[in-house]
Every structure is written in C-alpha cells, then in structure tokens.
Image 1 (tube, one colour):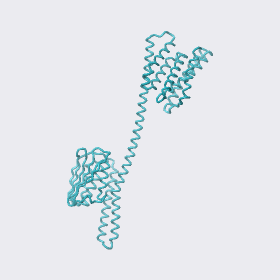
Image 2 (image 1 turned 120 degrees about the vertical axis):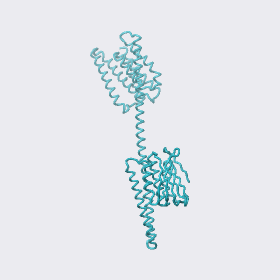
Image 3 (image 1 turned 180 degrees about the horizontal axis):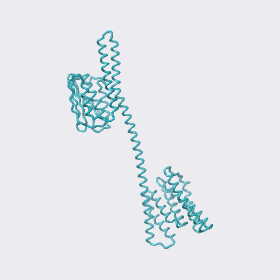
Length: 412
C-alpha cells in the first residue's frame, strides 16, 4: 500500500532518541508506565487480532507496521518526561516524533484516531511548560483536527471540526493543570521533608542546649561546692592540732555548704521531673518564702509574666542565687524581690540591706555572678550588680520579652 513507506518514518526518527539522548525511567514513574504499556499492548493486540480476522493474511504487513509505529508512539510518550531541562533540538525532535507517529497510527487505523489525538494532547499538556504551550499547542490541535477530518468516512462539517478542536484543546489544558498540580504536590512533599529535617535538627539542638544547661547547673552547684568543701577540709586537717577552733569552724562551713549543695541538687532534679512548668511568679514567691533564712524578711512584688521556659528558668536561678548571697554573705535583714516589665523587657530585681561589697574586687566566679551572667547572656539579656560596702546590694536581671539571638553585654 502506498502509505506504508511514510508511516515507518516516525519509527526511524524515534530510533535516534535513545542513541543521542540516553534515558531511564525515574523510579517513582515506573509503576505508572508499566500499567500504561500494558494497556497499550492490550489495545494493539485487539486491533491486530480484529484486522487479521477480518482481512486475512493480506493485513500482516500493515499490522506489522502498525505495531512498530505503536511501539514508537508509546516510547515517545514516555520520553516526554525528559522535556524539562533539555536542549531545544531534543524538544523539537520529540514533538516531530510524536506528531508523525500519531499521524501514522491514525492513518493505519482510523478507528483509533480520536483516542490517539486525545492521548497526544493530554500527554503534551502534562509535559510541556507554559512557554511551549503558547508556541505549539494550537498548531498541534489544528493538525490533529485536519488529520481526523481527512480520515473520516463522511465529509466533515464545521461544527464537527470545532467540536474536535475544542475537545483536544481542553485535554491539553487538563494535562497542563495536571502537571501544575503534580508539581505543587512534589514541592509540598519536599517542603514537608525539609520541615521534618528542621524539626529534627531543632530537637537535637534543644537536647544539646539542655545538656549544656545541665552542665552549668552541676558546675554551679556540685562543682563549686565540692571544690570549696575539699579546700576547707584540707585546711581543717592542717589546723586540727595548731588551731582546733578554726578547724572546727571550717568543718561546720563545709557541712553547711554540703547541705546547701544538696538542696540545690534536689531542687534541680525536682524541676527536671515536673510534667508541667510552674509559673515564674509562683516560683519566685516560693523561693522568697524559703530563701530569706533566719533574721531576714523578704518582700515580694512580682507580676504574672509568661516567658519562654528557658527565660523563666534563668530568672528563677538568678533569684535563687541572689537570695542565697543576701542571706549567707551579706547577712541582710530586709530583702526585696521585684519582677516587672519595662518596655520590651522583663526585669527581675533583688535588693538587700546587707553588708555590701565592691563588685570590681570580686574574683571571677565568686558569689555565682559569672553563672548568673552567662545564663542571661545566652538569652540576649544582661546582669547588673550595684553594691558598695555597708550600703547593701541590688542585683538586676533583664531579659527581652521575645527571645533574641544577639546577646547584649553591659559591663558595670
């Protein structure tokens, strides 16, 4: 038959593709293409079987060409997944292979005409960018309509041509919408995976920060206490024979320090075991009720603020340390604890009327000042200590109401 020669043209063109542009099906698309190829093979087998039964051995040659062209057509449809990020030449070759193989299939079996045209426009719509749609969709629709009408057994009418054209154009639009929806789903999936990774990283970072906080807690309580106890006991051992009274005093101080460290450790462990956070104001009232000691009166004026857990913990630790210093070192009789907001900051102030001291002459780490300052600096806050010998001490801790990643340092 005269048309057999040109219908083999798309087979030759398609054979060039795997040679010049190697290709492999993406893992996530393998399931879809297996089902598609199976359906296409079933349709081809039905067409070949029906034609052979109706036309006899004379149809073998035409059916062989039909199978070859159908294979080329399906392969080109699968190669459409490569349209993104490829050269201009490859895209034009793909379009040429697709158009010629579709035309050859329609010519070889006009009963498949509309089905082949619909598949062509649907797959093109799902694989082409908007720029390429503007360039080739309308010409391809027109070419398919012309081919369908030319292969029709009855003379076509304008209404039929318009109906076919609109139907094919709608299929192309549907394919494009399907492409956009798929891309959005893929982007959403990637975003969700990134969020999961960020959440995992945030959890790991929180764990590391908690470990660092616990290390500071143990260093400030057990570490400092055990070091001081060791030094005092060594001194008491040396003074035991020469100055028993002094040695006894050092032992008593070591005992008191050990008890105080035990209380601090139990408080830290209790806080770790709590299922729910105690509001900062309530915790400060409880610390004030416990922290004055004999001969000290504590006045409390705290606002009910809700801060981040790490902020509330830092302020509570500052209050605990300041109350401890006011009682043990300053021998204060009046202590005032105030928690309030000033602008965009939360301010904790612990003021006493004790013996006072010169902050500039205090060795680093003494009175727990370095630990308090470190906690606040990590949260973008600051610690101010105002004191003079004989005039009492005022410890002021300031934290931003919103966590800041840039700490401020205000030396005093």
